[in-house]
Length: 497
Image (cartoon, rainbow, N blue to C red; front, top):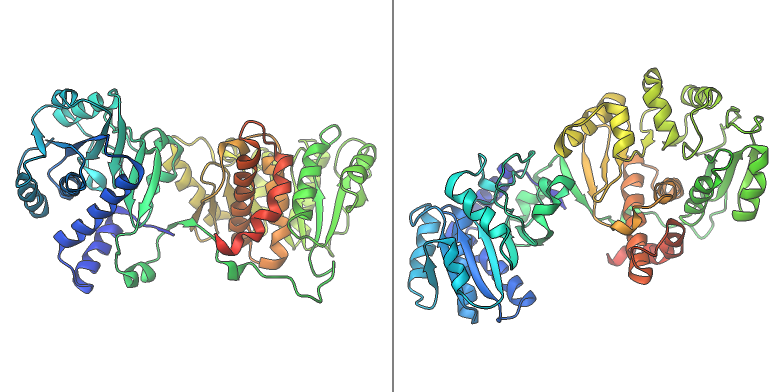
């Protein structure tokens, strides 16, 4: 699913109006009907509808929704926040609304309190057309509604949020649900906006498919194409399913290595090798008997460079520590290994402390930082939009693929294209989840053979496994180890997602 900018959405509207063809007022009617039907489906008619309408096209949507809900049998009232004159489509919808006697027009927000019963406040004040922070009376109204009891729904985007940049205003509508049209907004992907956006829902309003097909935005919202996930030949064997070496888990921290190994094993890897120190060998042999052992010559620190030339993939980083020998091992691998490299956790911290090593990163190396590790790599970021900007710049400079973990994990390729993941939940925010993800990327890579695609697909299946795990065990009870049991279910449902 493509994420379009505000300007691209305007262009999509214009293209649809011209080439469908359809009048702009009729396109508004179609969008408003989708909103009204969503509310009808999700909320009974015991709710009273209170619409806050601006005087632009977002306000026109709100007026049309109020009219339609009144026709469905809801009691509705409307506050014209910016007066009774505006865009042509707003004016036409206001004229239609005034012909319906059952809809009450109020002049002050306090008048909503005289309507008895449970209420739904519908924000149709500014939408994505916002060009400056909200002030004066509109700001007062928004702040009053925010502390008023009732369900709050925004049409398109909560008023006060900028779709494509950091929002700085003091008045932002706090929606429980945001009903947006055709494609998500970039703002929905940012943790800083979650308290305002609530749960967001995409309503297909029939924007012209040709325009959506031809446009190439910077951002997308990922749901996988099953055809890109190659099936395994009936004549395959362990050798052509991929060979992986995992360098993870220092002394006393072998849980990280075990999770990486199990993630790779359960996502399809053929031959699995763990490079470990002597005191930790038994941990691997008991926990993951399928794994071969590559003994490190050091007793307590991972630091021996072996011949990895037969290995298709190396995962390095989880819980390896920051010892000089480990740093030197990473440098040797960066200089000499030419298979697919996946770096996480302490490997990323070593890069942060030894920035000259960044110049040695092989093209399409996959990095999997959480926000803290990423900030150490690129420097402090001032907000979520700034972090995304620096993510693009980092990947373009070093020609790597970076998977920045979070609620909507952002995967960026060396061209600066960013795909946000569509699966996952807060129950996954526990130790070991990232280790498991590293293993899944490695297990998937031999079938996909493209770093960007493997990282996106692994994040999706990792999150989907977590979603199934949450459904079964609950977000507080589930653990990273539990998620492994649900990976098969996630993969089997792949073609029907």
